[in-house]
Length: 241
Image (cartoon, rainbow, N blue to C red; front, side):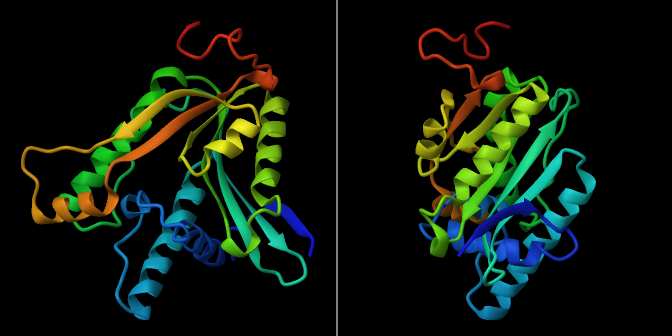
């Protein structure tokens, strides 16, 4: 079954792509998704509403962000989406203007405040060293049914070729699950980011999402221009500014 990489069709692909994303992050369960999506429902109707909200939000983000570049890998025999990736292709400094992600998908209570603080902490390491043109990998996932068949590597190879074409660096925030893939592609880990949202006045909603998410660790990964990295010799971002 040939697996083919292509650009997402924004008019039709987001529902199927979002469904694939949920299936991927649920197996194994990645607790950080509780920050990015509405709470899981207890029945099929609630699940469909959650899926619809996320799909519509992805489409809206894509339409309003010039840096957004979504891709899919499709099983050409069945038409099924095997995986997806969202790149942000920044031709200028992505942190030139203050910005924050408005958390509209969670109720206006402690859960939203928790998510806002989580996302603030998430951005800190890259904001310190990545104020330059770059290719950033924001989202990547593979359907459980298509794992170990090179889906993620198709995305990575495209991204590295794109960065080399533009002559820019690459950044991404890796989970412990994804980190070996990036290391295999000669990305260097430049910062461990342990995210622990805190407040002096947690309400029950804050406490609930805190228990669902727990402590989350990301690893800020970096690839220099044209991938010319030699461990112990190449100067890392932040050390040569």
